[in-house]
Structure formats: structure tokens, C-alpha cells
Image 1: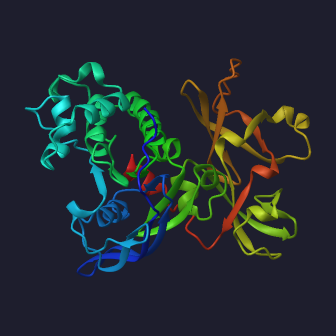
Image 2 (image 1 turned 60 degrees about the horizontal axis):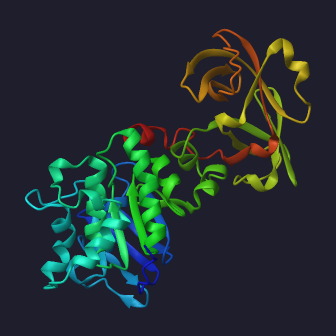
Image 3 (image 1 turned 60 degrees about the vertical axis):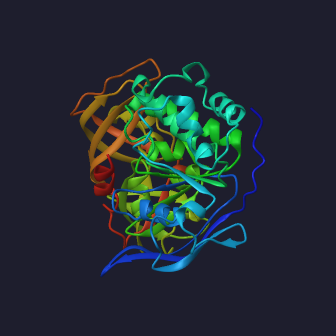
Length: 383
């Protein structure tokens, strides 16, 4: 199917907020979603992401601010007059209608009689042509989800809003549908705004992710940028796993030299969001998969250019693609290390004394005034 040429325009939120009495669900927010992008609002339950989506859809009235689509202010338009469609977690398919008629419903409601060609195009897009006459109860969860997407897209919206659309699917199907949704978005070329609490889902599908916390956007950027360069402890902990180590700056410049638990560590100066002054405090961060382990007796084989700290393994879990180790160290009581399963499993046992080492370029630093555990509880709530 060729890409639809749909009149679009950026989605722009200016000073938009939502309050329920004394409770503010979304604080004044300025946000631009580029035309034709796959944009994700990511956060735990209660962070304001769904409320933001509903204000774009017109299902919630904004307390302040405005919603623009292209050059048009659509803040005052009712939902049915906005050029957007929404796919919810509960697909709300009509049980008495087959796939074809579910997809055609929006067109028929608008009085369009000749729907065959458009329905056929949608069936081709979502790869359900051979199931056109089945009813919803005869479809899998993933197939029902694709019908819901086709039903929304057949109306040629300028923006498709997706509110946790994969939440009801099992893990394997959810991962398959992530790729399927990304394929569909690329093919139709319209703006998708996707709400999710699942970090992997956001990173797999989205061009840009807005990480939300407490009704505010903590950080906005491409998935790789957010993961490699988190700017707050919340983002570092919520988006994947981070080892955060309290440290003191020894010297500042193009490279930062810090002291942590008796070890001297280095990192590029431009990878720190903390004030860089001698004697200042910061939180040193490194992702678990960036760290390698060596037995204590093999410490001499670790290149001197690498950051290193000592520790003792207190736990390990083999999960197929990697072994996940928990290490107790003067730098932290539960440091995480992920060792890829490359076919030669050493099986380091609990109690083994080890050296943790990594490339200084893989280190980031955050302001120590932040809560070192911010985002940890949110990950548990989102799971």
C-alpha cells in the first residue's frame, strides 16, 4: 500500500494544564509533536500522560492553554470535530459485526455507501484480508488490535492517538505488535501519539519520547539519547536500570576526575549535568550492561584506562540473553551488572570477590541534590 498523503501539521501544546479541584494532574506544558512522527508519552500511572492525550483528543477540557494542529487552534472543538482518532486499550469492537463492517463503521456513519475499496486498503495495511468475515470473538488479541487501528485510520485522521493499546496483550504478542504498529505508522505517514507505561515499548516504536513524572515532562528526546544521557535521577532509574554512586569532584575540565568509595574514577566533562567544581558532590551513573567483571585475582589484566571498583557478588540470575549479577561494594550495596550470554558462561558464584570495570566514556553524572532513588518506585508501579 502506498503512503497516504494526508494534510497534517505539527501538534502543538502551549501552556496546557489540567486541574481537578486542588489537584493538578498536568502542570502547564509546552510540547511540540512533529508532523509524521511516532511520539510516545511515557510514565507510570498517575503521571499525567493519559490526561494529556485526552486533552489533545478533546475528551478532557484543558484548565489552561491551547492545542494547535498545524496552524489551527482546536482547543474549543468537540472530539468529533477534531481531525484525530483514538485507539484505546479496550478496542471496543462491535461483537455483532465482522471485521469488514467494524472497519467500515466510521465511513457508513458519515453516510458513505461505497466503502469496499477503502476497507480493502485497510485490510491490506493491517494484513487481515483473509479474516475479513470473522467476528471479533474469532480473532486473537493482536488481530483485534489491528482491526481497531484500521477502523481509526480509515477516517484519514491527521493524528492517531493510542492509549495503552497493547496493555491487554501477553509479552510475546505485545513485542510483535510493537513492530507491527511501527510498520503501519511508517506506511501511512501520519502522526502517532502513543501513551504507555512500558519503557521497552516506547523505545522500540517511538522517534521521540517524553518521560513524564508528576504532571511534568522530565526529559524529552530520542530513545537512545534519553537512555545514554539521562538528565535526572528519575529518568536514569525509570528508563532501564542505572547504578548511581555518590562521588566527590577531585578536578574539573574536559574530563572530570572524581573520588568514590576510595576509588578514582573519570568521565567526560560534557556527560555531567551536575555543577562541575572541585569539592562538589555528584551522582556517578553507569548502566549495568556497560560493566565487565574480573575475578579479584585477575585485577592486573584490567587496562589502567578503565574505571574500576572492587566488590563481592551477592546474587546472580541467568535469564537467557544475559546473567544478571548483584554486587556489594563500598560504592553501593546492590550494584547491577549484566553480562551478555556469549556462549562461554563462567558462572561467577555468590561470594566471589570481583573487580567491576568499564570505559570512562560510558559514565554519566547527575546533580547529587536529587533523590538517588527517584523513579525506582515508579518502575515498580508501572510493571
